[in-house]
Every structure is written in C-alpha cells, then in structure tokens.
Image (cartoon, rainbow, N blue to C red; front, side):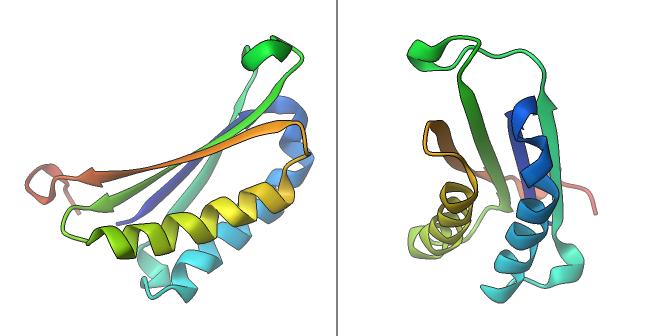
Length: 109
C-alpha cells in the first residue's frame, strides 16, 4: 500500500538501485509491513533545476500513504527517507520529498 516514487536526473542513475533498496527497507524498519511497500524510480531525461538549468541535478520522492496517519508518523517516515536521499545525492543536487495521503475509498487492493 505505501508507494515510494523517486524521480531523479538521469545522471544519478548509478546510485539509484542501492538508494531505492535502502528506502524500501527503511520504511519497513519504521513499522510498515514490507510486503505491502512498492518502491520505484523514474529517471528524468529532461529537467531544468534552479539556476543550473539543464546542468542541474534533482531527486524528488513522493511517499503515498493511505489517509489516517498522524503528522508525527508522517514526519518520522519522511524524515528518514529524506535523510537517505541527502546522503546519497551529490552536494549540488536539489533533494525534495513530499508525502501525500491516498483516499482509502478510491484505492483498490
């Protein structure tokens, strides 16, 4: 049920397999059933990042969770994932993460 979707500059591809695995495991370590987590990465071929334009690098994760978790829990998950991303990304890479609630009424298992 939880989804981790990471969009990233194509130049970061060599780091992503390890990072995605670490993010997947980190969420499980925070108490989510590992069999329910879906983690994937999407390389972005074309992007303009800040003042660096096409030369800039970016990494953005979206964490999708079924609605109902409190803000403290969301911050626990998001903070741990964002820290992993920052540790993996080059210093000049723009790293962001967003947490979104999914409506259980419109999510099909």
